[in-house]
Structure formats: structure tokens, C-alpha cells
Image 1 (cartoon, rainbow, N blue to C red):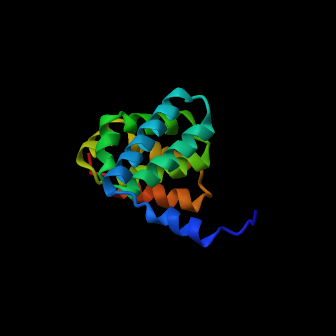
Image 2 (spheres, one colour):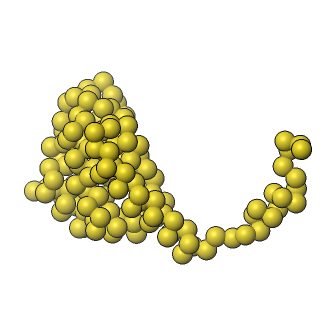
Image 3 (cartoon, rainbow, N blue to C red):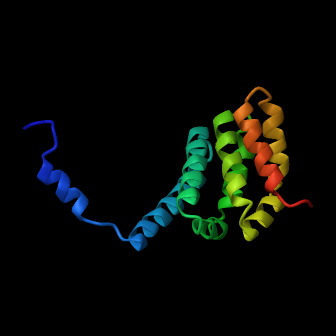
Length: 148
């Protein structure tokens, strides 16, 4: 069989549409599974790092998922990951970018403040002074947070 996809098979694959509701349902399931995986594998820094990155991509794909993050203990999960792995630059970068996105949500903003997100971001910057991307992400997140 040829390795080149046949035009008919290719056309058929795109003929089946995905409704926005079905897409949102898949994104919600992905968010729930990501948080579950992070909770079940707290001892694995890469699971935490990739989890924060996945959550960031999901909330950027659909801003309404921030409500689900609020309801599913997502803020605590992310801040716990930051707290447990302060020297993992990739995790801290993903988490900082995610925190920035979450600060725009009123419920999440309060949860971030209660969980000391500002302190964790400041610590991340101090622990990784030569990581300009992390520093910029942390600064942006801190700037978006309401003053105490």
C-alpha cells in the first residue's frame, strides 16, 4: 500500500465535522483528566510541568474552561506543583503563564491570592534569575494580580 494518503480517504476524514459543543466537551474532559493526573502523580515533576502546560493550552483554547479550573481545585493543584518543584524551570514557566491567564477570572484571582501565587512567582524569579522568559512570565502574572 502506498504511503501517500489517498485523496478519497483524505476527503472523507474532513467530511465529518466536529460540533463546537463536542469540541468543548472534549476540552473539558482533557482538563479534568489533566488535573486528575497531576493529583495522582504529585511526586513526578514532569507530570506537573506538562500538566501546567496542558492546562495553559486548554484555557487559551476555551476561556470558559477557567470556570472548570475554579470548580475542580485547579488553582491549588498548580500552586502545589510550583511549591513542590521550585527549581524546575519548565514547570515554573508553564505555571507562571497559566497563572497570568487565570488572574483574569474573578473567582480564580481570589484563589490565586489566597494560595500565595504572588509569593510563588517571586520565588520562581529569584530561583531562576537567568531565565528571561520565566522572569517575564512571572512579572506579567504579578502585574495582572490585584493589589492586596
